[in-house]
Image (cartoon, rainbow, N blue to C red; front, side, top):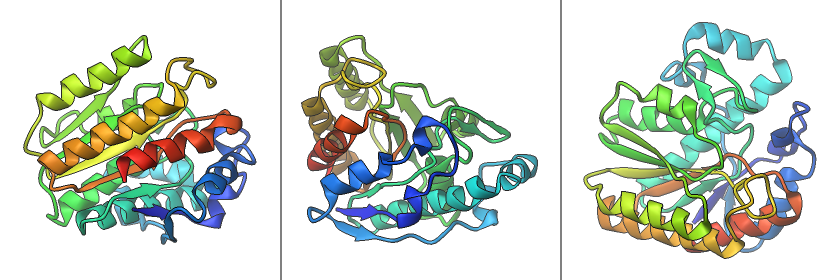
Length: 250
């Protein structure tokens, strides 16, 4: 497994919790020495137009500090997707997050939809036809759902559950009924942890989520899988939760 990372993701580009100082650092500290790190290149504006309208792109451009790191976040997701298609799992340790970024609007600490753009770039290049996006963040990724609302070849699924066991069972049940995808992409949010905003999942549950998703990708997608960071805001547990997920997912 490769970790897509740039020191620029540590930059504090806004005042929201996703941009908070120390958030990327606490994850990096848990992964350093355990995985191979790869540095991405910023996305091109033409990549953004695969999902976003020009008026939205121009709005993000006016946020100068945000736009620079957001381009690099999209580039990180694209790099993770490319590595996955070449046969190795990957994780984008990136920010800003993206799953609340719709084609013409965004909110919830998001600006550009990293995972949606990465999937559309694979599809444009005809490297995949059908893709599944699984999102286990606390919050529904309305931006990703909106981006693919009229594209039947791409399926978006947000995992829900009032308890950790229900959450895992809902994920297993959904995956058991879906076949014929070329790649699995994962919006990996860690804010449903028992010590984060959601108060439901335990650290070992993230390891199990990773294992379930890996087994699905091996069975259905030839093992082609990647994930990118979305939410997760308690720095005390965030790094450990990410590491647990990746130990199951790799």
